[in-house]
Length: 304
Image 1 (cartoon, rainbow, N blue to C red):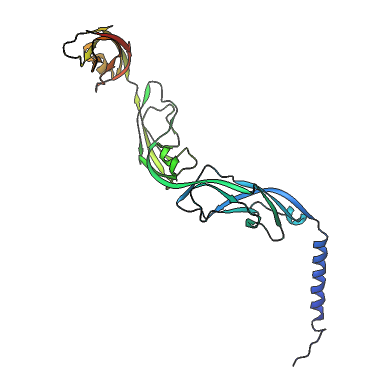
Image 2: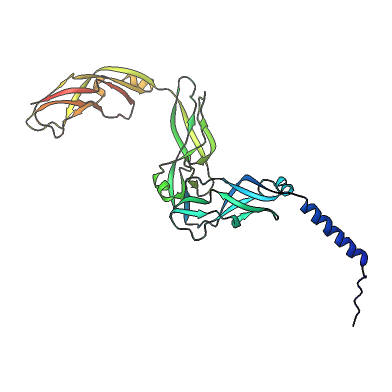
């Protein structure tokens, strides 16, 4: 049996006691203080089938206590308030922000979290395919106009809260500049959605092509006859005024050859009996040129 020697390793024992005493004196000499700081809010374990409506706060206020030395040495991210959404269900929910769920360095006590509860609106997640509508900025060179605008791919998948996904009509892109251009513009741009509660299933880029074409020539065609359609059997009709002025657009050779009789302006009398009516003048869209304004837009029709 070994005998106990109280003076064995005496030097190490004295050193340990001395260090402990110095540590106690250091800690005992520091004042315990409280300090309020703003810290990040971290949401964990959100069920995959749920989405958060709106934007939850990125940070909350906490009151900490500890030695002034420890509190003064705190760095951003060392204190974090954690919200655990495990088991959360759809609807408007309240989550307690408990002090014991705040991550803080050893030696610092969390006294209070403000606000003490967090309100979140949770909704079932949904996915939908929507068209991509490219954004275009600027104006082409004088004498040129924008033609067809296409995107490849033409659609993208979006995910988010069911109600917001249902309301979304289209995704958009970074603007494609056509300022001062005289030829087709092709650009690869990022696709996104304006609603911050929605996101793309996968990050997506699109190739946008904007046709820039010489501006078509415009011409005003006078004395275009206004005809009627679908007049009931046994009736007669009178249109006043009986002629219109139509602005047409197209290639110069085409529109210079257009005569008033080549433009099919009409009023539709379907289902109308005897009487006096104010009806809109319509023009069948031709394939060779475009139709601009029609004057007058409304005429008086008397049916007998």
